[in-house]
Amino acid sequence: EILSLVGSWLVTNAAHKAESDFMKREMTIEDLEALDSDHDGDVTEVEFLSHMLVSMQKVDQALIDEIRELFARLDAQENGVLQKRDLEILAQRRKNRMRQIGSTVRKGEYV
Image (cartoon, rainbow, N blue to C red; front, side, top):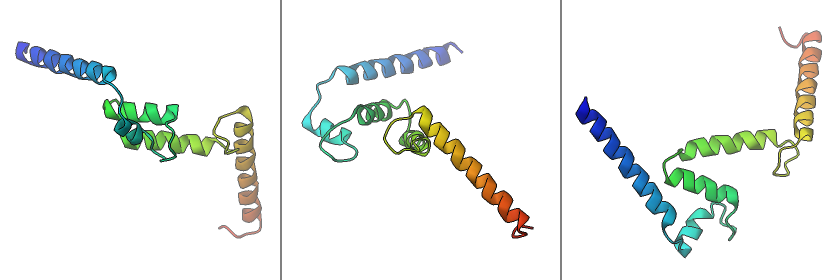
C-alpha cells in the first residue's frame, strides 16, 4: 500500500513538472503552425486552448471535436456565437418538425 502511494505521488509529481515545463517553454514557428488547425495563418483562442488541452493530455481530440460539433448544432444562426436567438430558432425548428410529424400521421402516412 505504501509503495502504491509513493508510486502515485511520483507519477503525479512528474506530471506536474512536465506540465509546468511545457507551459514555460518558448513558442516556435513550428508550434504556431501546429496550433493553426484550420491552416488560415492565424491561431484563435479556441485553436490554442484545444491544442493545449490535448497536448497536456487533459482531454483527447475526440472530446474536443464532440464539443465543437455540439456548439455548431446550437449555433442556429451560424455566426460563431451562441445567443438567445439561437435557442429560439432551435425551439421553432423543433415545433415545426413536430407539426410535420403530426400532419403526416393525420394523413395516414405513418402507421
